[in-house]
Image (cartoon, rainbow, N blue to C red; front, side, top):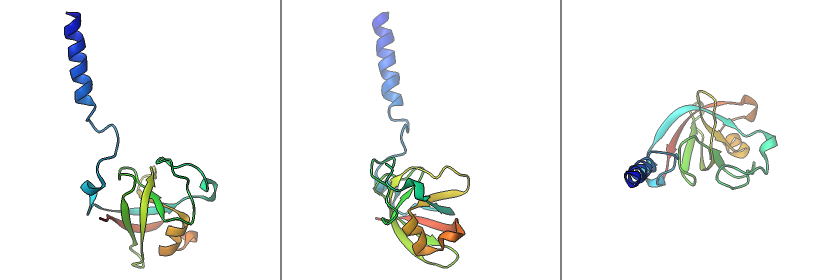
Length: 128
């Protein structure tokens, strides 16, 4: 009977191991994915801190945080107010504020809008 319990336990563990414990997946699975909402940008205090992917955050590099997209995904972010776009690489998780879909590096945000605005209405699309 004890052996049967261990076998059942093993089956349950194996079944649950593929149940979306992480938001990863292949970047290719996300190509063409689109989303709309607001973009924010990293505050100065995050300069040099480690991101969820293990990379250091740098204001001058076009990177971003997204809740689900795999690290390394390339995403076009378009300001819906002026049509300007920037391509960023996902290397962090967030933002965790309702309505915000992406958190851009400061330089990426500045390419498509004014940092004094604080937030921008954007659409995002995952690229190849």
